[in-house]
Image (cartoon, rainbow, N blue to C red; front, side):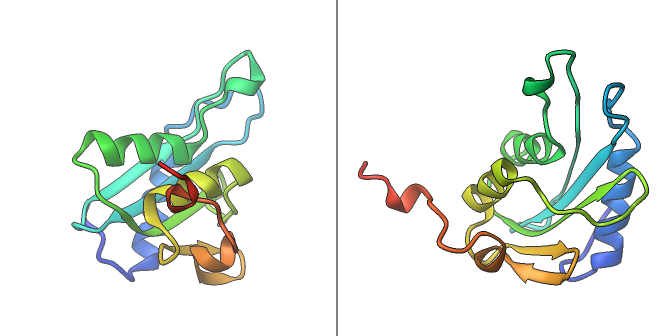
Length: 132
C-alpha cells in the first residue's frame, strides 16, 4: 500500500487496517496507527496487550520500531484509530515517542483536525534538551 503525504483518508485507512491485527484480549480496544516517513515509506503499528497490563505495547511503539527497522528517518504524517476506525489521540508516552521520531513539524490527524506536534505536545522535552 502506498500513501501520499497529505492523503489523510488513505493514511487513516492504513491505520484501520493495522488495527485489524491488534492483539487486545483484555481491553478489547484495538488500536492501529499509520505514518509516513520522510522518504515516503508507509509505516503501521497495532497495539499488543499482555497479561501484565503495564507492559502493553501501544500501536505507536510498533510503528516507531518499524521506522527504525526499515531504515530510520523521520515521521512526517501520523494518524491513530480505534477498532471502530475513529481517530483517537496518542497517550502521553506515545506523544513523546512521536516527538522524538518526528519532531515539532510532524503532522498528526487529531480529533480536532490536523495539527503539528508543536501544538499536540507544546514545550516538549527532546534530545536537544540533553547535555550530551
